[in-house]
Image (tube, rainbow, N blue to C red):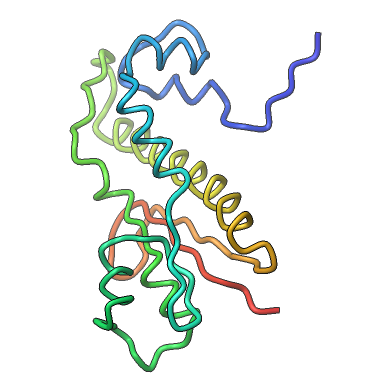
Length: 167
């Protein structure tokens, strides 16, 4: 039998705070996540987009302010404005604390690295789904993404942003 998987590798579950004996996302979600929380996550995988002044932005508090005329960086280029307004600070996004791992031998540095690896895996999945959503909404445009674990100005930590590529 041949298995094909070009999606997220189930081995990422080894980094989860809650131990789970299988690398099966369906089993994990069915045992740990409610339907409303699952739908909430699915909603952020296909966001709404705004197009204002030639800029394409995902709908968020900053981009809504921009669309209402409360712009920052008025003399910036389209790329510079998109780079700023499309910034998704993953570091600050999760307001619910992580569960404490049962692994007591884990050092603080190992725990930090594990959590950062999870946030970066999340960012890569956001990029993947947002690329798809952008290509559906704007089939004639191309977009570039940046993911950083060290921050993207003015934010610190794991971040993602995107902008149009003019060819």
